[in-house]
Length: 485
Image (cartoon, rainbow, N blue to C red):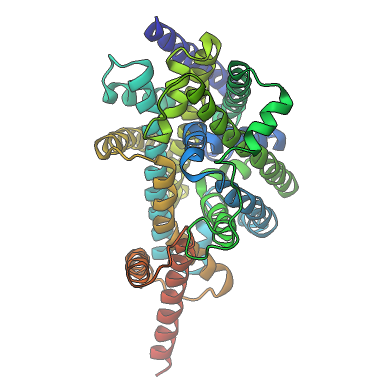
């Protein structure tokens, strides 16, 4: 019964995405311009609403809900920092990108530093996005495999999911993604609210009792202003949140490509601000849901799973919250998976074609054929990467993603900082500096934590970026000094 229901939802949802893709592309010829920029005709409110679903992803849907039972609500300190990061993007980075008038934001690095730096930025984005997307899809595919479709092998689920995404994005790319994201965001929000109401109903709480149960819960701790050795300290979380958003959104081709489909800069800024405003209360709801699900598990006499990611799937697929919650959970998790994977696959294709292959120099038809080949190859690589996470079997995917980001996005932060603040010709050394800086950051973190009580949070991202910027600055000065003599 459950297998039939899940397959029916998956296929029905996929057909709905195909219908949207067909409607969007019916007057298009599948050109690269449409695939990369949606012809700069996307309404800002559509982009803003759709980006919520892309950011939430299956990881937020499951991991944020589960993390509250192990790490309390300290995550909100980082979420507050996220909002100020969105402000910095709206008024600091978007004006620069709109002046650039290119589908890829990494063109800026090429123009201000040089082609090797350009390639390095694109390569680190591709690595970061591939790892992040694979980790998020791993979690969703694992849930489908363990709780919904246990008779289908994990690799079969990954192939099915990724190839579905490839099919509906391969014609018009980002133009399709902007509109399918609206459907996916709607499904995720409806699923969240339904499961939240279902949990409250199962507990028999009134609105006032729900509020009291949450704020009085042992896991409701949200602020840490005193323990400087803790990675949960407010200042570490807050400033890390700002820079994580600047790097993982503002310096990320995936998220910025959607913003660049807006009609003008003003619309793109409105989109970013409204998106930032909506993101904070949604994350708070996910954390509150985690507390309520913990209470529900205790109420039902169920053991809290060792892995926080399993809490929501256990209750919804185990029949403890009714058929409606099961259906909405299945729809929500599938929508979140597609919403993250489609834009990631599109943005990686864009970066490969524009930054690495320089398709603007090729005839239109040849460039189009090459783009389709790249799109398919990246889909296959993504399948392999997801299965690699399955073999690793990480216990907390959200933390793994952010941890990876501190090392793989650090060089991007350093490259952009150098290009914007101190642009000089240091192109010869850029690839080596970008490779060395994450290694130096890791060694620095290991050394400090080995000999002191200090524990790094995501502030290692700033150190990583600073090492990259410093390396670029030193080598540029050395080069100019050598030329002068």
